[in-house]
Amino acid sequence: MLVEAAVIVLVALLLVFLVRAFAFEGFSIPSGSMEPTLGINDRIEVQKAFFSWHDIREGEIVVFSHPPLDHCPGPSDDDLVKRVIALPGQTIYSSGNSIYVNGRLLVEPYLPPKDPLWPPIASSQDPYRVPAGEFYVLGDNRSDSCDSRYWGPVKGSTIIGKVILLWWHDGRPDFHWF
Image (cartoon, rainbow, N blue to C red; front, side, top):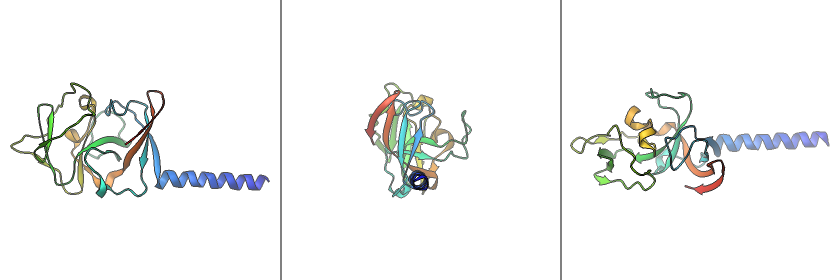
């Protein structure tokens, strides 16, 4: 009976490890850079299985490895969570607090009111073209986010997965699917 219990525990641990390594992984939000969408200490679930960075769409929230050019304050070994604003090959620029992707105004209902966009992204006369295989990402709380404005676009190969579920918000269970 003891051997049977040990085998069950080992199999359960192996399944948990495999699911975490290859299918889904939980992350905790360490900063306010994604507020109000994701707050400090919120818990999210990230899809890793059946995920390809080639399928990422504008507006999705992704988790990616820390960019090598990041010199912003904070831990440099943690993974980051940001929203995809522009896809490979697209052009992006800002005018005031508005962002334009391929010349069209980006509608961003998830932003907090009166969130200043500084520093600016580029100008309409000289928009930034996102390189092939890379993504331009920003935090939802632009005034408190170190993102592609500071360290450039992120390589698709560094994207771990996309956020599919917020399951802990403001210190309590709160299920929201993305």
